[in-house]
Length: 243
Image (cartoon, rainbow, N blue to C red; front, side):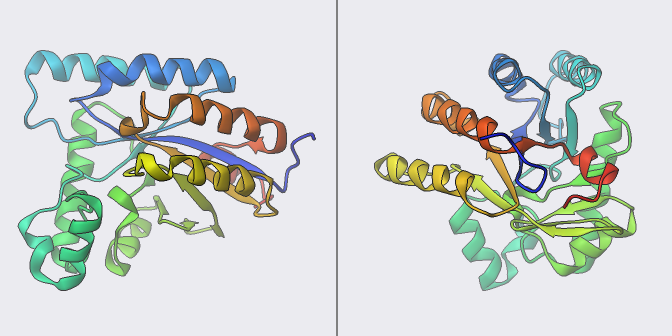
């Protein structure tokens, strides 16, 4: 079955940071060779715990990815929950569900704005172009955060929607982060069904923890997707109106 414009797929790799980029670089390259095109990399910009040499290596690798047409997306600040998050039951619950990674969950508007500002400053310190897309860690955000991101003319990605000042559409995410090995076959079988489903926009969101544990299953899933869906980038969403 040939891909059609009304059934699309977006591939993204989450949680790329100064701490893990060297391990992830060959995996990302292998994915590019398999898919036939570059894809989205979600970058954690905080480098406060890294050495000067490590930061320089990270910056150089980001430049390589940019030159190779990877889309670099801003993915929070540290990707870790802070004391300001733990003031409500909602935040404590998301902390439990995500192992402390829901950085923007239930943050009051002031703290959210401050953390967003820090994330952009850290991004600029990496020598990157102004971010076009912001994805809150673990997709936990708030109404305040979404409005703050849109006010900076960035696109905001939540768990099920992608929104800018000019468009908004539903996009179903396939993610295996925190997936118990016991249920992996069931989850991957369900993911295969989603690829064949009439849902127009699906994204495969990969994480460092997926490799090498689920590598072969992920390759099968992407191969399945290539036969049934048109691979799109975030930039494509600005160029056409097929969504």
